Length: 529
Ligand SMILES: *[C@@H]1O[C@H](CO)[C@@H](O)[C@H](O)[C@H]1NC(C)=O
Ligand SMILES: *[C@@H]1O[C@H](CO)[C@@H](O)[C@H](O)[C@H]1NC(C)=O
Ligand SMILES: *[C@@H]1O[C@H](CO)[C@@H](O)[C@H](O)[C@H]1NC(C)=O
Ligand SMILES: *[C@@H]1O[C@H](CO)[C@@H](O)[C@H](O)[C@H]1NC(C)=O
Ligand SMILES: *[C@@H]1O[C@H](CO)[C@@H](O)[C@H](O)[C@H]1NC(C)=O
Ligand SMILES: *[C@@H]1O[C@H](CO)[C@@H](O)[C@H](O)[C@H]1NC(C)=O
Ligand SMILES: *[C@@H]1O[C@H](CO)[C@@H](O)[C@H](O)[C@H]1NC(C)=O
Ligand SMILES: *[C@@H]1O[C@H](CO)[C@@H](O)[C@H](O)[C@H]1NC(C)=O
Ligand SMILES: *[C@@H]1O[C@H](CO)[C@@H](O)[C@H](O)[C@H]1NC(C)=O
Ligand SMILES: *[C@@H]1O[C@H](CO)[C@@H](O)[C@H](O)[C@H]1NC(C)=O
Ligand SMILES: CC(=O)N[C@H]1CO[C@H](CO)[C@@H](O)[C@@H]1O
Image (tube, rainbow, N blue to C red; front, side, top):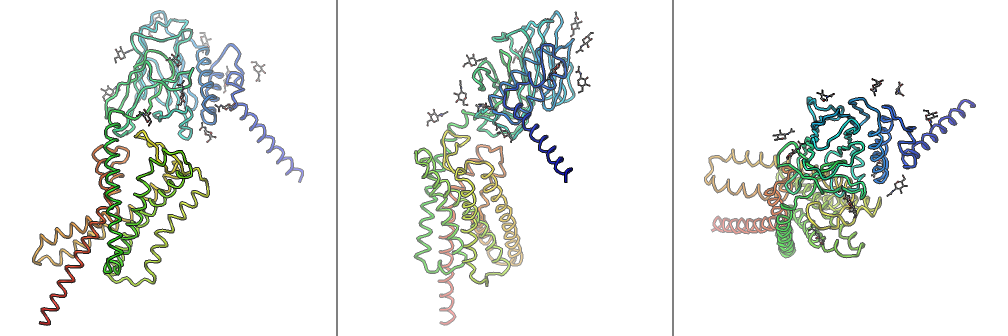
């Protein structure tokens, strides 16, 4: 018993002391200088301790702490004792301290994630820094190179509105010298392998210590699309990073056109969907068809989607947060309902093919409706119960506007992208089954009369099935990340017109039903007569 108590006490103590240390480390009160017991003479161990501390701050601190830690680390590196050249690597930090001899003729620094060398190329260097002769550094001016990556989960620690490539910063400084306004620029060449779409481009920025912001002033970016490295040419020394910013030359015009296409397409879609619903209500034949009943649910879901997507920007611009919450919630719900009904279309198609037009499932439509409308409602309710703030204003990344939608990226990914991927996979399989079926039918009636006519009809049907199953939405996957402009247009047009296509499908089925009915009656008449 006694033993157990002391064990718990020990555990508590270690926990508390760890917490206290941790608090101290992160609160910024203890800078690395006090935490690592640095006085004046700084050896390698102090520097390593300071790097370790800065690494912790980048993991757990806020922007102010991070900026302070980085500046302190820079000054510690400048004061670290070194004879000629020294490399210090701790965790994600890679630093080089270099004392030039009398005649400074420029310097090249090669680095990757674990090592750094002056003048000697590394096998696979990720970063190459070229310092000009103009720095004029001597034995009293230590050149400091420091590169680090911070963890992905704290991607936005510098509160930059744009993504910093690779969460990587490269710092340069010269002890006892303030370097700015260089005639010959310093060049920092980095490996750049990220695939970015045409609406974005990389841009070299530096961290301005006095504003704690990233800024472009004095830096030139040398990069062309498809190139696997990027060179930043700057006329002063600090920490540099590559930011992924929107490319205004592409975005502005194309975004405008895309917005117009979407608005026009959605409006046409909405109109066609309303007509389709009217057709369904007024036509008894349509209402009796089970497949049509399934389609009409998809039509309603799509109509809701268009209805809430069209005014979403206007709602976001308005001041009412209640309205925005409603719009976001309904937009999410109708999107999910569209997905679920697309999946049910696939399922229905499967039943049709397997059971060949005879579906004997008790209360078939009721069951489908419970899934089709209920599952999205459950998902949306769970999200809104967990946190209402998951819905609200969201800035559109590529264009200069906000809409009312899901604000949390995890919620967005799991409840839309992942769900859609599942639906898409399911429907692609169903589509494959359909094609197989059509091919088999085709084969068996190969000696039939009007092959060309039949093929044409089959292609039309397949295209119709494709829109019903929402396969066109999958374009987004084919052009993932690298959404080339033509694909973006095609995606925009096809999807905004999905409602219209479904309307056409409705009309065609109606015509088909009518002609077969007249044929049948004339046939019966001719046999009777
Ligand atoms: C950052 O965190 C420290 C404590 O860790 C706090 O004192 C400081 O006010 C915070 N700064 C900002 C801008 O939140
Ligand atoms: C700091 O170092 C000095 C000597 O190097 C030592 O006497 C002192 O106890 C150290 N302080 C802490 C807090 O470790
Ligand atoms: C640096 O730390 C190592 C262990 O981490 C130790 O063996 C070495 O004596 C330390 N050197 C100095 C100068 O404190
Ligand atoms: C620098 O050189 C001196 C004398 O050659 C040597 O004692 C010392 O350890 C060296 N320091 C480092 C950091 O290499
Ligand atoms: C200065 O360094 C260069 C190479 O870095 C070397 O070739 C040269 O001999 C050095 N000069 C002196 C005076 O040490
Ligand atoms: C950096 O590149 C520019 C051309 O882009 C060149 O003029 C300059 O000399 C280079 N600087 C160094 C230090 O090589
Ligand atoms: C950093 O920002 C301040 C304030 O905007 C500005 O005066 C200063 O020149 C900037 N620093 C650099 C290196 O551009
Ligand atoms: C720094 O950036 C933030 C947002 O990124 C902005 O609100 C602030 O005005 C900027 N500060 C300066 C001095 O530019
Ligand atoms: C950067 O890429 C270009 C072309 O892709 C190549 O010519 C150049 O040598 C590369 N530069 C470095 C430093 O790797
Ligand atoms: C973004 O929109 C706001 C207001 O709608 C406008 O003031 C600003 O100039 C726009 N920015 C760009 C880059 O188009
Ligand atoms: C600025 C920032 O996002 N800091 C976060 C870094 O990660 C830790 C742990 O996940 C969070 O507690 C911080 O808030």
